[in-house]
Image (tube, rainbow, N blue to C red):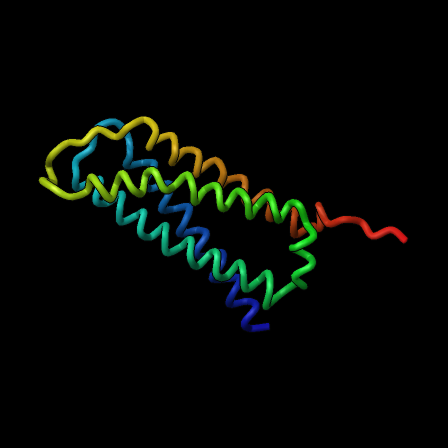
Length: 150
């Protein structure tokens, strides 16, 4: 039981870090910013990447090792939607990550223009992230689990 609690706790804390990192990027990445701010946004991106790995790892542990049986998750389309959205967030985050990696170096006071696609990518990530607790709540309530009729 202690391992189960620890895994769930790490899962939640890493989700909070993930959301904070994306929200921090959203607050920084707009219009024209200095390379120094782009560097800060990239540090948030690194925190985001680490949090994603922990969320994924602890999520897989919950699915296959601790907690409810794997079938509880595997048979639930709400869970599959959640996983799909998590992967979609990962794909959407590639564009800002690459852009920040390319534009963080140089004179820290130099101004760079943030393309609107970067800002919209981060906004899409946030919207999807805010849907995840709803899906988790539905899943925890058993919504989506196929009814067994005999």
